[in-house]
Amino acid sequence: MGENGTFEALMRRPGMVDAAIRVTATADEPPAALRGRARYHEREVWEVFVIEDSSDWPTRVVYRLVDRMDDHGDPLDPIDDEL
Image (cartoon, helix red, strand yellow):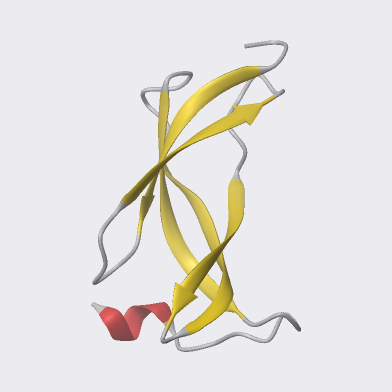
C-alpha cells in the first residue's frame, strides 16, 4: 500500500458496540492512532484510538479507545471506568 489504500478499522469501545469504518491511508503501515467525533452522554466529543492489533494489515486493523476529549482537548471520563 505504498500509495493511497483503503482498509477496515475496527474501533473497540469498552462497554459499547464496536464500530467498523473504512479508512484511507497513504503509508506502508497503518496509522498509529485515529481520532473521530462521537456522541457520548448526549454530547459530541473527540474519541482517540490506538492500534491494538495490526496482524491483518493491509486489509484490517483493530484500534482500542484510549481517550475522550471535549472540543478544548480536555479529557473526559477515564476509559477504564467503563469496563
